[in-house]
Length: 206
Image 1 (cartoon, rainbow, N blue to C red):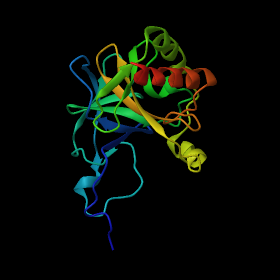
Image 2: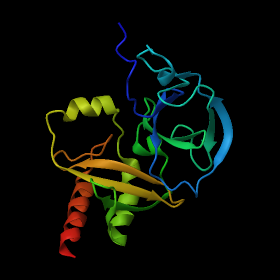
Image 3: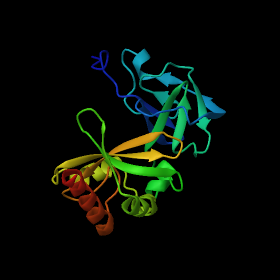
């Protein structure tokens, strides 16, 4: 008996062993397609009883045959265009740092707190704090999402919604767990943890 026929899939793509999630919130006007690198060869949404394990070329919602492209200025292991939609890496077995995963070193313009309700901006970091975050965030040791989930399952705390804005105008959102403290796929250093708490207090001091 098939149990997947009416599944509501998150938008996921696998390519060269990397899992990507569809980015529907970014301003994409400042980033551009590069060279074609392949096509979607299997779509779970097109099969009544799709296979469970993703393979390279598989997608959940994209149509079979959707053209994949490089994103100019980014490594394909970090970002891919699929048709006219941007996909960002969230799981890469070969990554050792967050920069290996996201390819953001030298590209971040600012980091901010955003609302967990409507994703609206709450407050950008001050220039001094921003400079420290931009320097330290890409260096953090990357931990695979499934491993991070295992390590944090008994340490659920309060979360801050945060967002990085790149110099090209695109954005990447993530959660920060105040209890551990940690990001989606990395633990924060004591310096970054203290910095984030100090900046958070400024929201209520204004």
